[in-house]
Structure formats: structure tokens, C-alpha cells
Image (cartoon, rainbow, N blue to C red; front, side, top):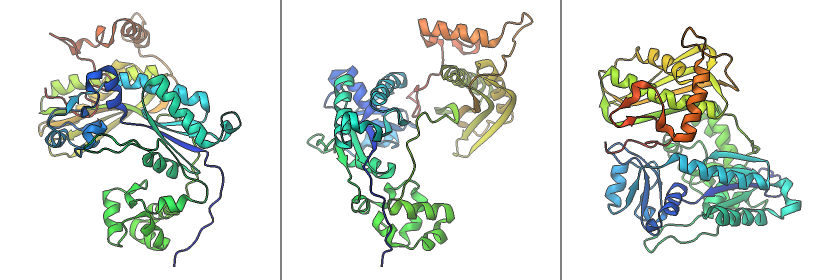
Length: 421
């Protein structure tokens, strides 16, 4: 017999806003000839990964995180695009401006989705359903994009509600969803329990396999198991968490302006790299981009980490914590290159990443690069201004210069895997 838990009934004031096929939809806005066609955004090479797919592409079974090679087999006539992170970032900023005009309690969890707490907006705007409709209307009018919105008493249920409101792919074309799905207080479990158990946060392939041994397929199946059984099978933390979620207990608040824990870039290469010199150039390129992003966010960091994935998918990381926070390309690259010297690339490097963590609002001091006392920080500000006026490729580390100009790394360049070259 199932145990019953008291659910606190309150207004469904938590909204989850999720843009519909965001990256692909932005691309269609830029090129109207793509409308109605299967569009796939992501890496196009043999190791590329799908970042997003239009609903027309999803009708062929294409989905995010799928290898691009498989996506091409499923939908050979699709339009493959490499992705433009800066463009998506611009639309994301405009999206968040809309959301923040409705409530200051906005927690962005990705470029294309966010949680809102609209309890304080009800007097001015209306009930949660009216607020959700307003959000969709403004996104459509101001961005010419569509979004799905879920409203509930918790983040967990609101996110699942937004998924229920989404369009559905079909061979005849996308089938419109409701656009807004509100789960009234007291009806959370009726909505939640029919979902597949992998809809819950924390249920990955390994956990799903373990739960399958107990015959668990749905969230309701999971709720029927005693908490002690889950703790014994999954450990105390995961077992208790999943038992609570299965009963709709999720008291996490909306947390505006969550501070970033690290800023980094990584790239998967179309061909394995064995040459330390080439890898050194790649480390400089990645470091320059990481430093650029640090400065844009007014941050600096003390810990530099290099991530290396070899041809056999074995992955290692090496980190170094500096005496003071840094936010310049030469400082990040210097630490990254020292760490890279500890790595033997002879097995072939498939992926290289550089990140900075242990972040602070601003650097404690600047690193001098010559005897005149001029600082890398001052030079970096000048570089930032030149790039702002003339583009990212206007100036950069000399080691990245080649016959075709500077090979600067910018957020979004092959963000989801390598291109064909």
C-alpha cells in the first residue's frame, strides 16, 4: 500500500519558460528559405553532435546530443548549420529582458529556458495562466519566436508542464501544443506519476538500469517503492532525493543571478592531434577566448584547468591555482601551457579544454609584461575595444596568426563538435 504525504497547496506561481527549437528557430528567422525544412544545428563532421533540431527534423527521429553522422543518416536532406552562439546569445538576452520586466525573480538555466517566480506579479498581471500567456505573447511579438510555459507549485512539475505544452513533431509537420500548461495545486501527483521515471532529475542511464531491476518504469512505480529500498539500491543521497521527487516534493526556490562557478571552452577535433606545438596553439586560442569571457562578465579566477580527452576517450584534467586572480589571455595561457607540458599527446588528443574557476569579481592585480610597467590588463582593455569596434578577428595573440588571418576561438564556434575540416 502506498504511503501518502501531505502536499502543501498554494498557487502555482513557479513558471518554466522553454523556447521551442530555439537555435533552429533563430536560424529560420535569419533565412526565411529554411521555413518548413528540417534544420539541424551542431557539428557537421564525423565527431559532431546535434545541438538542436527543428520539429521538421525531429519527425525523422533526430534529437539533441545525437551524433551528427546518425542524424544525417536519419534525415539526409536536412540543412546542417554550424551554429552561431553570439547570435543566440543576443536573442537570449532579449528574452531575459522580457522575463525580467515581468518579475525580478528570474533564474536562467540555459540560453533558451528559465524559471520565474511570479507570486509577486499576480496583483498587477493576473493569475499564473494569464502571466504565462503574456510571456508567450510578448516573446512572439518582440522576438518573433515561440515558447512553451509550464506553471506549477514546484520547479520539477513546472518544467515537466512546459514539456507537455510543447509542439509535437509529425510526418505531416509540427502539431501545435497548448503553449501553456498549468498544474493546479493538489493535482501534481496525478500529472507526475504517469511520466517515465527518466523524466526526473538525477535519473541517468546507470540509475535507470538499477531501477529497472525493481520493475520501475514510471514515476508512479518509483513512488511505490519504500524509501529504504531506494536508499539501499542507490545510496542515501540519491535514494532520498528520488523518493522525494517521486512524491512531488521539491522545495527549491527560484534563484536569480546564479553566480558562475567556472568559465571555459573546449573543442573536439575532426582529427586527433599528436603535435605538442599544435596543441600549444590551441591552448592559447582557447585561453584567449576564456579570458575574453571573464572580462565581459567582470570576473577573474585563480584556478586554471586543462582538460584532455585522448583518442580512446580516456579523459584527464590538470589544474593549477595561482597566487592572484587573472583575467587576461597571456596569464590564462601561461598556466594552461605549463599544465599541458605535463601531458603526453602521443596517443592522440581528441578534445582539449581550458577553464578558469575559483572566480572573483575582479582581478587583485595585473601582470606586467615588460619593464615599462604597462600591464596585460591595460592591453587587454585595448584589445576588447578593438574587437568591439572591428570584430573578434581584428586582433589577438600573434601565435594564432596565419595566412587566413587570426584563428580566434569564440563561444559557439564548433560548440557542439567539429566541422568537416
